[in-house]
View 1 (cartoon, rainbow, N blue to C red):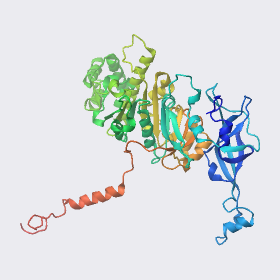
View 2 (cartoon, helix red, strand yellow; view 1 turned 90 degrees about the vertical axis):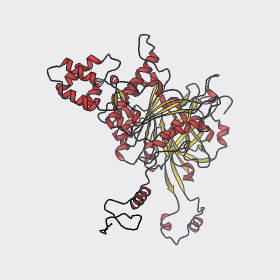
View 3 (cartoon, one colour; view 1 turned 45 degrees about the horizontal axis):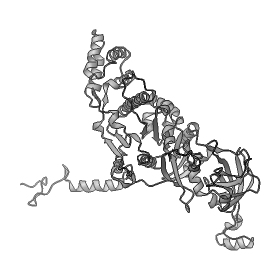
View 4 (cartoon, rainbow, N blue to C red; view 1 turned 180 degrees about the vertical axis):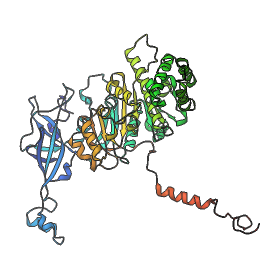
Length: 558
């Protein structure tokens, strides 16, 4: 970094990097320019280039640009190459070119800008590079500093703490240079996160990488995971893994709640929750409303208390059908209880990840539990931030990050008991320190308001046109350059965009420290094992050998 701290990399340092092309002309869109390059592989889509340009200051600034498109401009004549018997090297020699140097590429790049310490962000120079400007590959050490949306180290005020950073992987296009990609945890949590990918692309794996980073000693986050399929159990391996040990003795903790350990306190249900669970007729709904009003101020009540309140207000028999529904849906259910088994003090603590395994619950119960917990979290954080001395709610004195696997279950493009509170948290949660992460393989099935409220996006391979269009319509940070990359990505590759980064970046997600529990079932192996088990176990219709060699069911006398 230069001593005058006006640039992240100065012009002299940039000049030492390889030259990859020369500016030809402005591009078709504002902020774009076109350059020519002899080697398309050196400047593939998503690569970063840089050039030196005067911006009116005392010295030239190093301006960063991102390659958004490339096309082959010229090469060896196609008419010669159609004949497999023609040697490409001889054709190139005859044309006065090398066999491996006959390609010329026309490459489009979009200007990102230069870092301005006064604004603590990137500024567009408002002018394109001149024709003939030589372009260099952007230095890896520069990219590591400027891609995350944080103030670079050399520009921070003395005494400012280092921000918590999540190491997500490396720049995808730099096979010869491992450029680390890190995200500021505060931006991810505060502006909310969407991880969008087709099944099998690595979305749950990527989410687990992020959670690992959030539980490391530098961050020690409080994380609550809503897990509909039981894919996050292995996070408890962090507790004994050396990668998570702090010099002060810190180790993260993991609380894995199994389905039979999950229940909802009846007094935490709203009237809307009860209507959703009981599905009453209009007359029953009136009875239920009166009963709910009677019990609303109670700290705890049972299903039987609700039945009695219905009968107390409507002894004329209008409550009989509703009482039957209360008995069937609440009284006979282990999921609804008079007492609280989801105490926030036990679920959300710094340095702890709590996984709620919901694979044994119906979709409705999953939604109800998410709604109840998010409402409690919101109120607890509001009490801590607002600090009302007359508020009887117990505050949670630290921020909380919540992660929703299969988010379209909880915030669908339709009805859900959890939808309204997720919308509220995504729109207002930042000021109260509640962040959400939404993971889905079907963005088109997600509520578009909720999706649009996610400021940071990690987008992996998506081929479905409806899902691509949903991203185009709802994700502000996903420009054409991001969308164009999605079909061609492979497993473990992602485009990270939005508030956490200064520019979209192609990333190869790092390997997890813990094991991954969300692999596809090995159908062939399970079929073979089931077949072998069936051969070893006599069926009811098959004869079984006796110890003396006779056969039961053979028709022989015993």
